[in-house]
Amino acid sequence: MTNQHGSRIVNVGVLALQGDFAEHAASLRRAGAQPLEVRTLEQLQHVDGLIIPGGESTTIARLLIAYDLREPLIELGRRGLPLWGTCAGAILLAEEIISLDRPALHLMPMTVERNAFGRQIDSFEAHLEPGPFGGGAIPAVFIRAPRIRSVGDGVDVLLRLGAEHDHEPVAVQHQSILATTFHPELTADTRIHRHFIEMCQQRADNPRPSEAHATLGRLG
Image 1 (cartoon, rainbow, N blue to C red):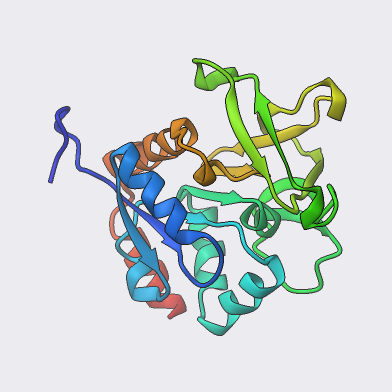
Image 2: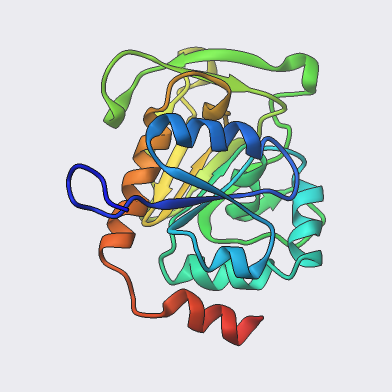
């Protein structure tokens, strides 16, 4: 199936082991993509990119191992499969994680600290300058959110909090890896989802032949 521009409609996977994957799927539909819930290696073969949702980072990290998905995701992420982590997902993508005692994916050159804004009662909403996404302010929901303490070379800061939070980064991208410390899926704004869909579309339009199948066949 193709869109009005003649490009194939992309299948954007949402890791559906724990967390708010259903909200991401709904946002993807509103943004014009076909979401696919991913729980198995076989399902991972059919996606053009994958969202790792918010939830409990220690639980998701444990389930990635239990479902034999951790090593394939690391390999595919290194090979350029678009990955987007929100909140807990952003934690799992980071190369260095403060206070996580389980193996993560370590794909994004950044240091994050879990629950650094406080407990559930300290959750808050903010309106971010839109930066590269254009339009008006971007609504952002922070729930037991991590903080990005530092980023490495080649990491682009896309969005920042305001002066009251020292303009700290809350959305970053490194090549085909995207991370947000807030929850875009909990608002009606689909700009960041559309950005990720475009990343997946570029990947789908320029595939590496049989890459996902070969990788998963070797690791499965």
